[in-house]
Structures are given as structure tokens and as C-alpha cells.
Amino acid sequence: MAEERDMMGDGPIRLTRPVHPMPEFVKDSIVRRGLLEAYRSRPPYQRNDYIGWISRAKQQKTQEKRLAQMLDELAAGDSYMGMKYKGARSRRVIDYLSPEAVRSLAALSNLRLGKEIAVSGGVELIESSPALVVARVRPEGGQRRTVELRSTEKGLTWKCTCTTKGTFCKHCVAAAVVVQRRPDFNYSASASIKASVAR
Image (cartoon, rainbow, N blue to C red; front, side):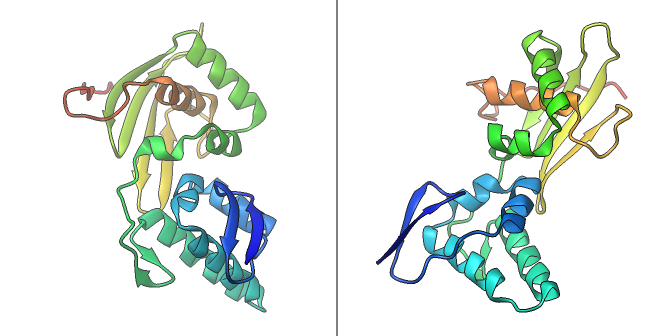
């Protein structure tokens, strides 16, 4: 029986087949798409099969195609290697916001500044549902920004009204930190926050 520590799973993998080490480019892609928790939630045999399947491709184009399929299947949660997967569950925004995932999405300076904003009380959650979090973020002495964190079929998406388009900016980090730290953030209908977002 093969046993090897799974870099991105929940400990050692024990399988009757060879265990495939995860290439760095696969790990980076999983983290960049915000799918680390989705990957970890899959059974060890599935994680191992995906890595072996991608690694065995002889051409880079084939590797990229297989990697894209794995990422899409992890994001959707309802298939594995082109087959139906019954372990699927709806992905929530909070499922993509583990501390490791946020660290992988943001630059170090944005991590530091975002945490400072969150700790200083500069984040107000405006709307929350399993698939969407909207927050108003205002650094001390700075302009108020609106952040949207959304769970989609492709993984986590984000949008901020600041000037750093496309990056996981300090405002996104601040909103993510507040979501991580709220023990009552369970999206129940009674606990859900609903308000209009200033446009």
C-alpha cells in the first residue's frame, strides 16, 4: 500500500495504487482559482487520479486541457473525470476564503493593509447569501469602496470599486477577513443581512 503526504489534502494518502506528487503548476492553479477547499474535500483516490492523469500527458497542451477540466469539475462539484459525482455540494463564498486561499490571492502589501482595515472596523457587510457577499470597506482616512465576493461555477470571483481592477485588493482582503472571523456567518435566512448597496 502506497503512503505519501498529500501537500494539499488532509494528511497522508493511503492507496493501493502509486501516489502521484503534485506538480507546482497544478498547485498554483488550484490556489489561484480559489479551489483549495474543493480539492481537499475530494476523496484521496480522486485527488491522486487527477494528478496522475494530468502528469501523464506528454504534451503541454494536453496537460493544460486536463488541468482545465479538473479545475472546472472541482468548481462545479458534481463530476469527476467526466463522470457524475454524488459528493457534490453547493459552494459558498466562505468555502473559498480560507486563510491560505486569501494569502495566495493577494499581494503581501494588500494582505497587510486589508487586515489592518478589518481590525480597525472599516468593513460593513451589506448583503450576504451563500453565493454572494457585498461589503462596504473604508480605510481610515480613505474613500469608501464596495466589494463583491461571489461563488460561481468557475470558482470565486471578486469585484471592487477601487482603481486596482482585477486584483484581490486590500478592500477584498478586508471583506474576506471579516467573513472568516464571523462565527455567526452561516447564511441562515434569519441571520442574513439584506440592504441596498449604494451605487
